[in-house]
Length: 215
Image (cartoon, rainbow, N blue to C red):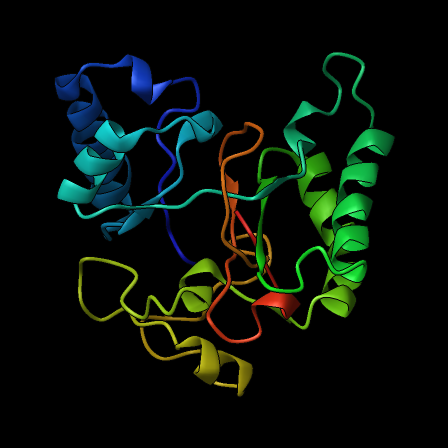
């Protein structure tokens, strides 16, 4: 499992002062909630609601955090709210698959936002996994997709490069590589949608059109 950070899900970081943004990253996210509990310090984060600007991004960068933004939102977290049904979420997954099939991602990969919130969101990911795997040539963890072989500040944890991963080397050191549901599909892109904690995948320079990742 690859540990990344999100921040408090109800926090719109661009509305905070510099000191508040720093505190959000350093005390709540980077140190207290993750490093002191899990024992590793993440090197990337996903903005709650996709809300980020250059100021927030710069503060994150100063603390050693790369900003990861999804390109396609499953909106799975919205099921049961505002008349959003399970069929609506199914349609979101199906639309992503259709876009890959019609060549929308012919020159790039895609990061899809999914969530580990409840049985429904996890069941959706599991239900569509085989279809996604059949549609995209590669489904890889975010760190692998971006060739981030050193995922944490601490040493002793290493990920394979993209080339190593697709060649069958899925583990380097520090335990098993991420699996679907902890990290997922491929890509790079601009913010869309909103959400809370989830899993992620990304793209690499090779075969981008055939890769997918989940955030």
